[in-house]
Length: 130
Image 1: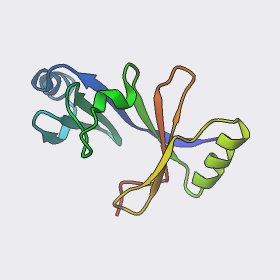
Image 2: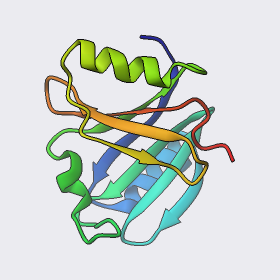
Image 3: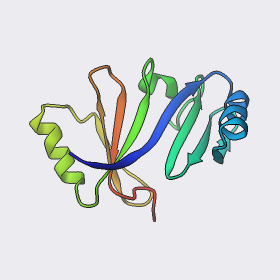
Image 4: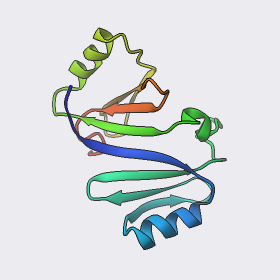
């Protein structure tokens, strides 16, 4: 399996204001978006870092920290045209695909756990492009 990049990482934080100050003001990441009491999205080159407030929830009211807690969530971007082959390799290695989703762009992503229960998201190439 080959990937183009580590596309995105998610971290749970206790204080979004401190996270913004650290990642934006000290490390120089660009803040792409901020949703008060939920999350901040930072960009460094072509990689995104999403900091979730530990007590925030998703659209269904489920705690975001429960989605990957106590571990973390990273996103890997498939090489162009390799998404289905990546899914087939998961079956070959008997790795359960937890779920699959379609983004607003129409591109797909699936989710697996690594051996330590970290949530790994594997997307189609350019999944955030329209």
